[in-house]
Image (cartoon, rainbow over all chains, first blue to last red; front, side, top):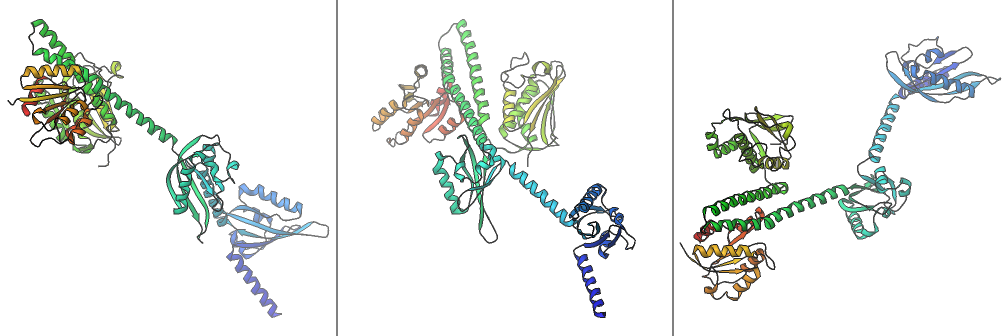
Length: 489
Length: 132
């Protein structure tokens, strides 16, 4: 007898230990009396001090408020069915923590088929549930990213080249529904007209096990083609067996189109440039040679005057042509070289070349390049920016006082901004805002105004990714701003 | 100032060749001026008379854009032309093109003395002959 008792104690101990290890407890519920018995570990799970006098309500008190209705439903259903349906729910413990538990049980009936007793287990599955949710979450995320990726994706079975999976992007780009593609040989996606090209890519893939950025085309359901960059690799398991081939394609149709457009545009500019160079400048230079020649012949005063005027006209036209060609060159002179430029030094050089003009009108120049001392930019452009803005400020000075011109560099919202302010005539912004930087627009009745400088400056600034703008008031002065893109140096 | 014996104008623009001839004649710096309307005509002459230095020009004013054989084609052929050691022919490109690429390309060629942008004024012409 003693042995049996000892064995029983031992078994109970083992059960208790096992329950503790898997965070499970067991219970008994005698329905007619609403008496309930919990195992030791169940008390631990519920953080409830062991006591003898507990009921169903003791347990129900711990059910999470949001799950109470559900639990009642499950229990009622089990009693009605005379069969315990296992279920999960949350409990809210005294210390405020929330756990998820899994209830399982068995129902006992009396001779009249009434439910008299339930026994069962209650396991804390919080961690499993959380892990499951995280997994589901990352699976959802992965699925979302896969389906909505910018690239078209599909997977191919290595044995027979059949498509086993594809994403929405592929279906939408090619005009298929997923079931039409899945289980089809992957050749349906490639145009038959480019068979050699495709075979070549496949061979490269077979040789190397992966291919990168192959330029090829896919065929839509309607037969039209999509230009793509294709990447493919094999997915291999730990044993080194190929599970499937993964293929992704990026639609580059638009990129190719805009590259073509750009090329065409550059071609037109270059054609225009050569028309000006040859077909317009040629005849013009003949006229100026005739004028030049006439100077050497004997002319009366009247003729001489006419020839002089003609000379002026021809020179002016020549200048316009040269400027036009220059501005066009800027636009497709994309390889122009940037270098580190010390602003102060560069400006001093420009000031030197304007020395006489500055002296003549008694201009005062202030320079503040303390905020930004150097910039990385094409020297030619910086020179042109400085000299155009300076010459404008000098040219359009007020007759009432000597010009005061201020150069300044600063940082504004991640951009370097260069400003040139003057106290000159100013520009009526209401009137001229739209035309300010256009070619051959002149805003003052000034004999030297040619309307080319600002256009040229704007062209150069924009070619380098910056912008130019102006604030001005007639009679007060103007400030021109030039912005430069963010620089690494 | 040196006198130039022979000057060739290779240009398809008749007005240009006419006025340039007039200016050159007036300047009294050149003994003989000849005009060719494209690169091929000029090359054929040089090629035929390459062994007679007295018949070869001292200076060629060469246009770039011409029919049949343009200035570039002429320069190509000219570089392979075997001339008598003692004879030097100065080639001045005289074009209305102000394309920086063309100017750069022409000036980088060893057989080209300089690139003159049209119009070829009297002053430019006299300065050019003075440099020879």
